[in-house]
Length: 340
Image 1: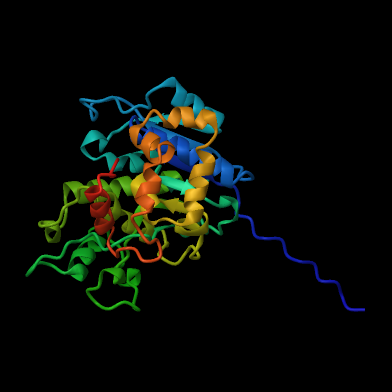
Image 2: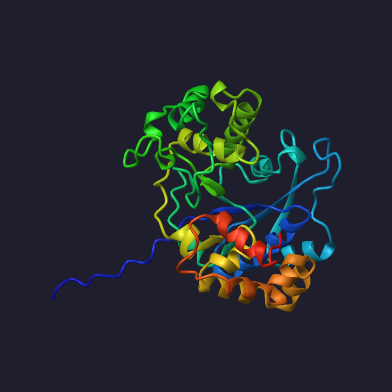
């Protein structure tokens, strides 16, 4: 008789933590939705969900950035999230996207992590995503938003190479040789909607160093370039490359695919995402304890619970969408359905 061959069990990623930034306003409601979708779609995931909360201080001179309302805090606690405070030392109100950089200090040193923007919906089992935490990466669901090439100004190669040179990094090994010279996809560029690595302290320290360095002492090639809101996405590929990561360390189809959706804003979710994403959204927002919290924000109340999202969805053929996000936004605004 032949030897019995046992079926292999599906690979399970080792335990890791997840962090989002929770801040007063829309982001705190997005954080509740993120946590609810994570618990719904990934019931066996066994890491810590940390909601990093910026604290008042000199860099928040006119606003308190903390989560508002006991109901939101209670909802996050019920969903197993830990609200952990952090201080803003380099960014604050002047550059709110810097929260994701400074908030990495809330994570336990030496433990693998995945950061997500709060405007993300978890739609599948995140425990089964084959992360290689030794080789970091980020979201490739992006457009060529930076740099903006000016007539007679530096091109993509000169601009990006000056940044790699500033931090002593090898530029050539970051390039995608399958893409043509001076085409934006040839150069390492991510959306900062998610990123991961084996050690949040090492990653956070370098992310802070590079972002502050680019902001305070940019190379001459950046004289015509805007860094607001792009600074985090300019620094991120340099950080990822410095740790031996890249664009190909995570197989396609998981994040920004079957397991997560970075929807950005609810009108965009309804306009362009799959029926599965809308189904998950409706399932996780249906319980009364979630509904009670999310109705505290006008966009969530009207889009999800009062049917405006369905009206937005009816404006588009999800299999034949405009190529540029701005065209989708403009159509929604023209119909009077835009909300943030």
